[in-house]
Picture 1 (cartoon, helix red, strand yellow):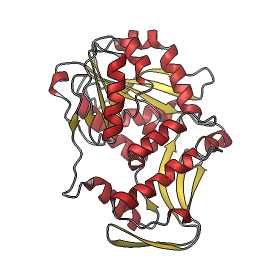
Picture 2 (spheres, rainbow, N blue to C red):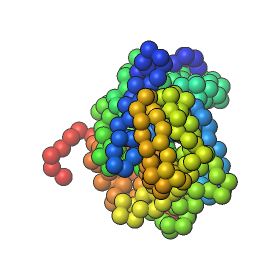
Picture 3 (cartoon, rainbow, N blue to C red):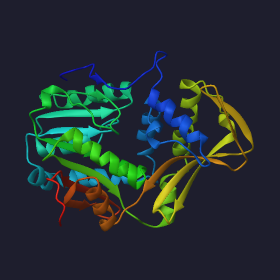
Picture 4 (spheres, rainbow, N blue to C red):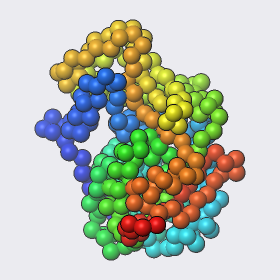
Length: 328
């Protein structure tokens, strides 16, 4: 690995708290519908729990996407070409990445993630698997433009955003993220992104509320993180996990539901919840082809390729950052 420490672009205050985390939590908890952006689910513990989720029987997206990445290598090589710097947004454990790297022969790999320890461990593991590949881990919030390591500045870029994470965001936030990715990667870059597909409600809800309660622990971990990092006093045992299909918005919603009336503090500010009131912690929007293309185009990316798994549960879409045009 070229840089074991990696770059660190997270803004911490004097006590070591992520300023953006505190701001997002406090702002979200003040609203009539309490809500916290899903990206804060992924501290080191949350990232490990997500990896555990990908192994539960009900969670089909990880298996479906891995099938695509392993079976479509020749297609990726033809469409993408070799010699690019692969920039993975929210890289996590990078378990899906080797199949892509083997297929396209990149010149460098740049994993971006806000979970620093998890990022560096995963980068070291991947570097061991590809000893000749320069790896530059960057601890950063990729929701805004990220300054990439100077070693890859001259290389054509391929953004890699697997896992259907784009669907965690409402349309306007997803659009902002896609535009930030374009600014990070530059004109003429490409983006390979996972996008989950609309299917039967029972299948969707089970994927986010598994019988083994791994997803429940993932969701509750956010409250534990708030208590730990923001001096919170949320009574964890008074919350329960819920996953609900919202047909109007074509998404599965995750909530933390108060079992009874509770009161608590976060960063010195007091909050209360009535019995049945929720904290909305994650959306997972599902797409068809038209809605997927529309979302990408709104973010400045032109779709140029699309692949599905054998059961047509999940899609991987390739898009290009083309010169802006005011006409079709």
